[in-house]
Length: 382
Image 1 (tube, rainbow, N blue to C red):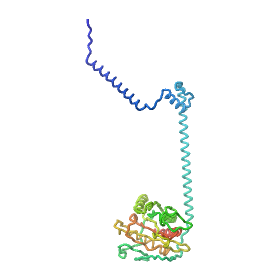
Image 2: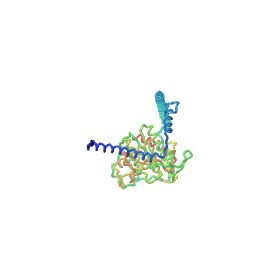
Image 3: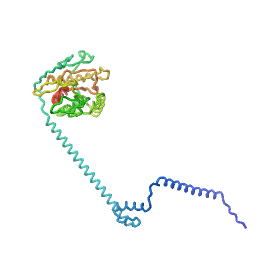
């Protein structure tokens, strides 16, 4: 009798599927082998080396004396974990202690810095001399004459624009916010005739990048005295004319715009310069008491160049107000106001101006003295 086995179609398909899985697994293993061979062929690590590396890490962190990983017992592992835990905790505590110590040192440094700043501020306050208002002022002869073509209430103006000032209702009784006073320098490197006390390394014709001897130093003096009168003064000493002189006003426009955005209610904006005649023969000055003081000049811009500048008239009126008070307190300290077509970034404030203290022939000492008297005049009108 012949036995015949009947194989169903379902069994055949099950067999084929199982065989397919086996083939797929073999292909995956082959791919992994080829990948490993290609990528790790340069790093030959034996089993003993691998065991040695693992044992080294465990013994180093857990202080287990044995270096043979196969000799480790559960007790060894628990002991290692405990010691590792202690070590990590200890390192964390040391790190925290170090951070606290560093923080304390930083706090001490901040405190020391703050204390030093307070001491410096107190020294500056103590260094401020009383500015007298009842004192004789006399003009010193100069071969360069101050010219003007308009005068109102004793205020002299050299008008270089096409505006007819006689037809304008100019009022020197203008009011501005005195919350903030901004001082900056479009020509930060402008400097003066050197003296024995203030000699500097020149970087051009009456120019220096050393802020201790440029017009920025005069700005420091003005800031110091204005601060002593209770004003909040921002003095920016950014270089706008170095390394390139060309484009100075474009760069200072960005600086001032940024400062104004951070310091709201800033009407009084002073672009502090010195007069630009390039030799040491021009040194306009007055004598106030026994002190020689460089003369000061407002330069006020308009929209005469075609650039939008709607508040130029108010800027002019503020300069007139200051000059009128200065004529009462220190006659001759100010030269005639110079009114020009250029805008000079003065569209940014209601009392924006250029103030030129001294000229190339004046000394830094004379110009610092001017800043002192200018601050006193400003304190009387703002």
